[in-house]
Length: 313
Image 1 (cartoon, rainbow, N blue to C red):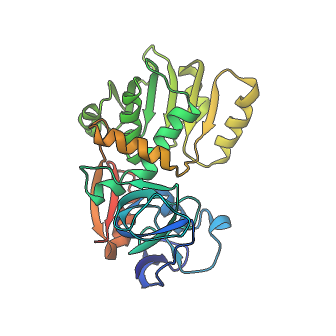
Image 2 (cartoon, rainbow, N blue to C red):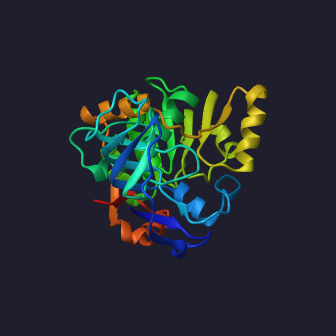
């Protein structure tokens, strides 16, 4: 099978397309014929070697975590999936493989593809929608009527967070460049702030501040959090761990770190929202597998609206 691989840690030039063995699914796995995959910041961080303690030093490495496609084979212990079924999902951990013609996926880390969307659109959903859902629901305890602020609202996770927060009844303030304000209002944002010169608080406090972009640390946000407000970050950095530790026992205001997990039940919830017209995938651009390098370059501009998708066919 054709697969995008990382031949060494470094810039996008270390990505190439190789012929690799088609994986054989274990008894608790299915083999998916991948029709589309997606790029996330996690992919570029791994390529650069930021997480080499987890990914190791043996090359080539496979890449990609989001996928949408059709079940090509089913392991003996998997009883609720059939060959030919259209599915979407996300790989857990640090060993990728979704940017390939086939990928083996454990049961419970995929579900049926949402109806009414293409494979490209479905591939744009898993990691970002699960991150937003798990951050807002599991870590921040979102409830109807809450004031929620999303920093970095126009990107992959941010555009999902705005929509999911609205689905769950919150009033949403979105921080982004001014050129994205109309877009964010179309997703349901009640209020938009230009990150370059906007006053975030303007006399209000937030029960939840979701720092998707990673440039507003807890100490800078604390004054605009409500007494029991929660700041949630997606960034694995020492200052985040320190804030989480310091606020765990000694502060009403809490700092949390979301580390997304692939869960079939959460993917099913996202599928229901998409089917009901409440949540829509946001695709910035689609690249063929052979242009994986260009896809990574675009991801690293940090000016992507929604997701970069890899069309595999």
